[in-house]
Length: 217
Length: 217
DNA sequence: TCAGACATGTAAGTCGTTACATGATTCA
DNA sequence: TGAATCATGTAACGACTTACATGTCTGA
Image (tube, rainbow over all chains, first blue to last red; front, side):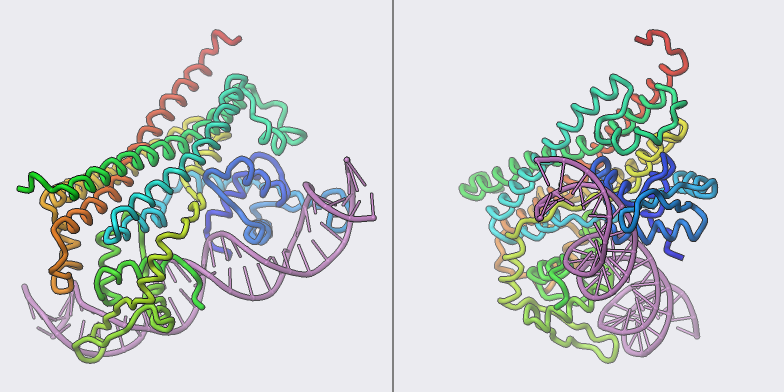
């Protein structure tokens, strides 16, 4: 009984697209889902075995000899059911543990300059993230206009395995949802950057007021 | 060697305010820091012992008999140093693992209605969070105007332990930084809600286009 | 020919939570 | 008197990461 963890269903969900090997899944997550998900091999392979033992997936030995032979995993009807049931279960609120926020809060008794430095570091970090997102968004918007999937995803998903009967409208939908997922990240980053500006303004105003505390009551 | 984990420094940072017991720290985190941090007893007490073993904190047996006697932990100069050094170390980018985002992404091959439902669930959840934040913000803004700390924090921090020599300006600063920390949460929630609206608009437009796919190319 | 991608897996360790055990004190 | 809160701790588990071990195939 390997837990009711999220990794199980993340994998199951990806297998519901098409049969894949552990290596494929890792690639797909790293390349396409990295903005909101991650998996390590140490989780991946044991979990795949677990899915097979529970009858949620089937393992098929692919071509190739020795270590080079890919194991293809396919979702079973039972697995499909379990996946949909999970989709419909309420999601837990992610428990918050944000290091930068913690540091900023704990800096309240340090010199103001320390808090300002933390804010600037955060801003620098988030600006970099925004750049990454912006590039992805440009690629994706183009894909949405064409109703296709973008290059990297295409590679992993679209070659041999995809059902050719999938209507173009469905492909467009997939791209749209991928785009929206990315938009979530972008709006979040922009909110964080707006917060940095607000914070820097507040702290600098506070610093000025303390240098010449004129109208004090 | 109990890891270079974040819990150690979170605790150290709180002890840098004033000596506290494990129970105090848990209360303080639950009541005042819950928007961006959490600690469990299972981490707390062993970590406190670890800090003492490393000479970063000192344990002092308080009044009371048997199990009721509080253990007060105070930071040492070495601990203070370690804390400040941590504050200045670059923070790691939190690795992303967002269940709702994952579900939304994986819903791309389900009926559109499923994606819309997920978005609505997310919106409902985030609206509740926004209410909580709004209440806290009102209390905090009042406290900032007065240059004091708000009730709950006052309780844990301000009674006997606080240095009476702390200038009023410093108290105002602490309240301001607390307020800014909260603002981070608020801006984040509002960004998520804005995303929900954007997403719902997009998906509904997409649904309409597929019912009567008139101007197709 | 050999670096680098392909491919699978395991062992050990970190980090954290939940649930429980224990007992004192307060107050309705 | 007995429920709630104060207070400290531990045991067991769960989720995940890192680092390693092993071997194959491809292409410059």
